[in-house]
Length: 338
Image 1: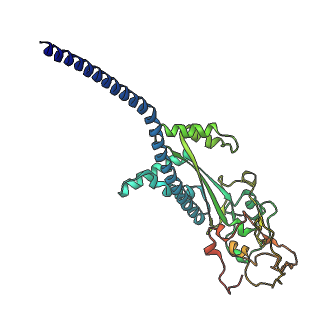
Image 2 (image 1 turned 60 degrees about the vertical axis):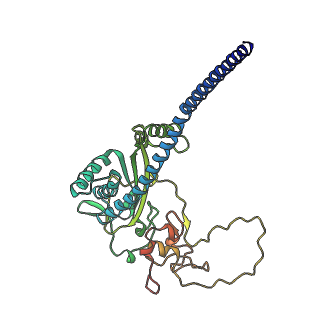
Image 3 (image 1 turned 180 degrees about the vertical axis):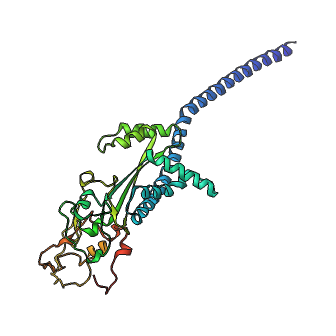
């Protein structure tokens, strides 16, 4: 009997221990489950915002690439149709159609094109940065009651700089179009965050009134610029801006040497090398495709007009041949007359 009572007491003790273990295990699991839920509630919104942000910025990158192509289409359309606003907007609309995912049918594309044309009136701003109004004042002629800059026989025309524009007539026949397009941010939460952040950080480079109203409508202003050579006389329109509306771009001497790199070590002394006169065309020839290039020769002697640094010494915006988007088509061939 005593042995049976001992076994019974031992069984009761083991049962109590198992009950405590089960209770502790259940409490531990419940605590771990509650901790996981709290961590998920905290981390999931942040993770979703990061994922949404990646998707939105990928869409913005796609929109920027599409707008670059559309700006080129707009400039090309304007180059062959007298830089008229309707032609430029029509070319811009054709270039932006891929952003709207049209149907593969002709009717679907026509419908989307009409929609894009209607939306561009309020979501896009087109400006002609070159030729400026001052260029029209210097070189334009009145033809059928419209002011236009001549486009024929540019190689035979004077390369004299205009008094108001600071350009010659060859420069005035480069069409530079700037497009500011309000891209609709489609990802929720992130679209509101991006636009409100840009409005709040509007400090060092403030947005103008048009760009601010785009941001308030949850549209991201994206800017693209394209330059082509005119293939028809440019006509004055409301899109043409004046020099006061343009940013102050650096003007670099076409015959100037590139700036020397600053090195920590002292440069080694080299023997002077005599500069031989070169008959090659200068950078101005590659940019404009007209005239005799710089008035100053490579040896620093006066040019044909007797002045050091002639009318072609300056290039708008400066830079090398790669800065000219039409360099490949306007560079004179070797051996051809200027």
